[in-house]
Length: 63
Length: 395
Image (cartoon, rainbow over all chains, first blue to last red; front, top):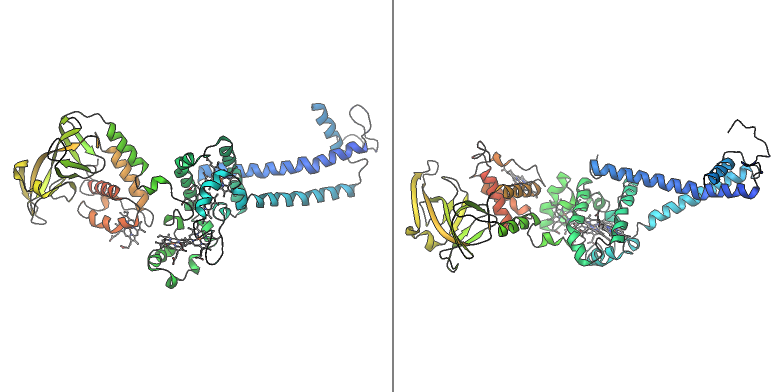
């Protein structure tokens, strides 16, 4: 993908130029939906991993 | 769908055409702030008492009980809320606990504890989860507020000082002694009958008996001189053996064999010669009525100079308290012993003392445990019959 020369007339798959609205749509989707969801999923997954670990190694204790 | 994702990716993987880099950075920055704030707010909101008791499962039972305790209302006005005691403060453990709460959401949806009856039935299990957590982290949550180093022993009550000062030296977990500080204890613990012991008693109630066989008592069993079970003759201690002679209705004719000291009335029947392991205690009128006994061998214990005689007596008991073997009883006794006696120090191996030393050792310590009288007698017998006197021919 990076091989294509970057021009100011980037087009969509079927050749139509990317519109300003489309670009905003994607940016907002990523910053406000996808990344937050991923962050929550990662933290939650980490929490689950620790919990599952506790099932094998017992509840958290003192060092 | 695939096409939409591809088109999405095409826009994303290219430098922007219409939006300036500055705007993008600002959008990311703002989104970051909002996310971070939102995330922490969510963590905080789910860490309030109001949130916990938004579920009736938490409100109707445990919260109502908490209201009557010192942690809800006291003269200094410092309150402990649910999360203070139940949610770890360190980030990783907190997140893990939040994920663990998915089990609670599941429980709320499927109503695992949605009635008082269901809650009581499950309470012991839930409490055990909490006890395990407190015992692993040495009651860390309590210590966020209470600290041994800041306790003024002179200002404490006598009983508190007597126990708390040594506990502080051992840095002991608070919950070893302060169970039920915030809520009622599970009912299994209030009645004093352990569910494991109750199960053995149920088993005994349903056991099939064959005359001529040897059986063992689960808990103490009353003895009578007549099959109508009217005239009391004494009682059998837990885990004592009897021989079944005959059955008549609800009554069992049993033979108790053991040794008696030829001193006083000889009210106690012991398991073996020279061993202070009681198997039955008889009423004076029965113990002194020599005709009831078929006496055997006489022997003098050189250690004490006491004369002992072997004796059998046949009496009546009510059906339902006998098991065909002792293994399950010993298993229960062993578990209770190691649970109750390992709290302050490693519990000594049963064979560490001999059968006649155990009673004094045991009675000096058993007050520290929450064993009821019946269990105490069983555990003591377990220790005596697994003491150094019996260690060679281990059961």
